[in-house]
Amino acid sequence: MGLRTDELIAQARVHSPLLARRGEDGLLLAKAQGCRVFDADNMAYVDLLGGGGANLLGYGNQYLLDAVRKASSFGLASGFHATAEVELVDLLAEILPDYGPWVLTPAESEAWELALRWCRRDTGRQRVVVFDGNRRGSTEALQVSAAGPLGISQPLVAGIPSDVARLVRVVPWGSVDAFHDVLSEVGVDTAAVVLDPIASLFGVLRPDPEFVREVQVGTKAVGARLVVDETITGFRLARGGATESFGLEPDVVVLGGALGGGVSPIGAVTWPLGLHAVPGDELPAPAPPISVLAATATLSVLRNESIHQRLEERGGQLQTGVEGLADKFGRSLKCNRIGSIFALCFSRTGVTDGRSFARVDQELWGRFARGVRENGVLLPSRSSATSFISHAHGVKDIEKVLTAIEQTLRRMQKEDEA
Image (tube, rainbow, N blue to C red; front, top):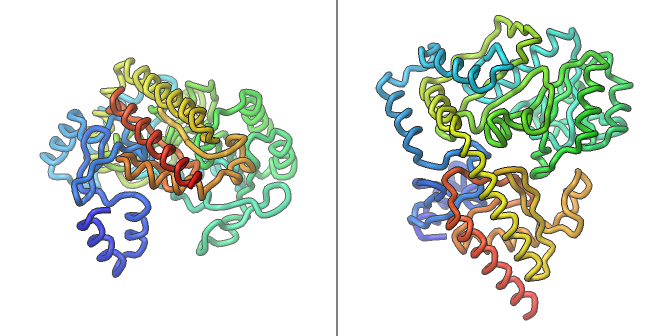
């Protein structure tokens, strides 16, 4: 790291150790443009972290900047439902005509709270069933891990009441038998089954069609509601997200991430029109005008059907290049990818579920990620965390990423031979 960055991290250690640690693992951002981020020493990095998937269009996108300027002319007032919300909801209804009503929230956490409350009120039940590959986000009810037979769970982090964890059952990703076993025990008291369709806690896994079908059929059979987590996949995999890509039939959809374009947090909850859902009166605070206008600008750009085609092409270019380099250097570097979402790891068998995820070589990944960073590319500090390509990544940018990977693998080979 550069001198100024080191100084800032040293300052952060005094009053905000968490900030310092994250700065060391990732980046203390000074500015960003296109697909590049810059630190305090003006060092540029091709970014593959993508703001957790939110920066779908890249940094400094002109449409998003115009939206921010427009929001500033409103006085940036919070606490009111802005007139721009009506335009955004109309645009959502145009892009996803089979869904409604829509509820916008200031962040994903409020969207999750609303969705789970609706499921419990609608079914008169309390329990929630999740999968071990589900993204946990910041929702307290999902911060659990399996701790015993039939997916009995415990709090994942200190401070979460055990009573909260006891209402959640955790099923191994991809296991139809385990899913049916859990439903046979707690199905009559299950309000919701939550499905992150790409198991993003494990990076990115393409769901098996039979597994998805059994989840949908089993959920319906016990009278529970299927909640699909589109906070990462929504608008990124396709305009209709994973629901469109994998032919899902959810009862509730939770969105966030790319909806705000990476400018400002925003969440959304929606239901299939045929369900005639009534959200309830306990609605969250309004989404800030800057979030609403940024979301409107993002969706306006996504009307262009070439966006997702371009993302697929750049993703294919990256995957083909990585796999070629892995063969060239005899490394067990694997690439799981769906569209513009990918995950790299060092593993002999690759990642297909929780067990294989636990076997990835984190020590080797640490060497690799640090080397790639020294060559001007940002990857997650842990494997196999989810990574992202944005619309701003061009052919030359992916070539830069592949060159950084090649240089890093060559250096690692020399170090191992020494």
